[in-house]
Length: 208
Image (cartoon, rainbow, N blue to C red; front, side, top):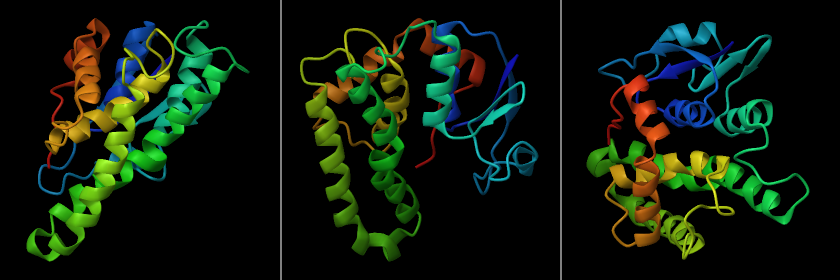
């Protein structure tokens, strides 16, 4: 059976959501961040050398990257759901969103998180970081203009993968100028499978 190694307040929440959407049988092993450092516990390193989350194990298979996990779970358990047909134009768009989420969109948001902890020492960097956040959130907002989902007419792994971008933007109070992104995130949060993922994974809170 597939096992999700779930760390509170982390990207593994979206994997839990995906498993609930697909009704995949799974086990969940919980890990708790250190209350002071907010770091993952050392027990995760016994699962993967990086000691990060999410991680899934499925028999002999072990995968640690969110995009790769989303791709694997949908191909292995989706029965054709939640991804466009291979070779289609929509599949290439879908695949781009899977990579864009962590490859581009999350960088300025994570810089905002870490530089913010420097207080005044980090203030010279904030104009550039804010500019990059606006650049990416504006791009995402434009892509959602007139659309219910990122790709096609139904939920796909692209929506699952991009959810963390929206959630982090919300944490930093950055959604105001982006009504399409804000409305999309609200729709995702009302999905029954998302609500189940919160019930099973714990309160969904991120520290600024």
